[in-house]
Length: 137
Image 1 (cartoon, rainbow, N blue to C red):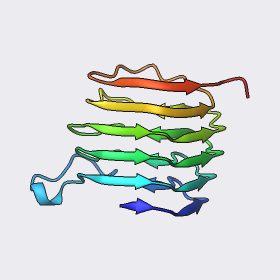
Image 2: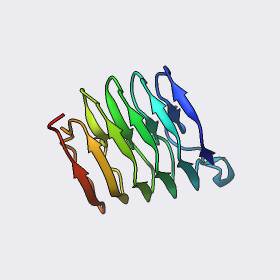
Image 3: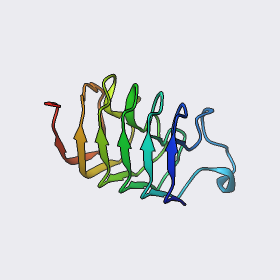
């Protein structure tokens, strides 16, 4: 669990496991991780990078303001599902609110509010989206 933090000026504000494919041993895999109620400001890349997570990754009720490149990343999450629920992102000028490439399976993005660009063009198998996008800022 990663909760109730204020994080600023890092490359990725919060990252799970970005070094490559998951470990073979089940007990070493990044699973069942909750990331919630964090204030994230001015990262160079992602507010939350779930890359390398395996399943049951839950990113909920975080607030991200002013990222240089991307908002929430899931490239890749191995196995899924990964949940993005009730996050608020403001001002992500490059890359967009969601950085989801590489066929992320089982992505659930519900009730998020994104005041930013969203130019992701990847495919999302077995994914569900119910969000509000506003690119008029």
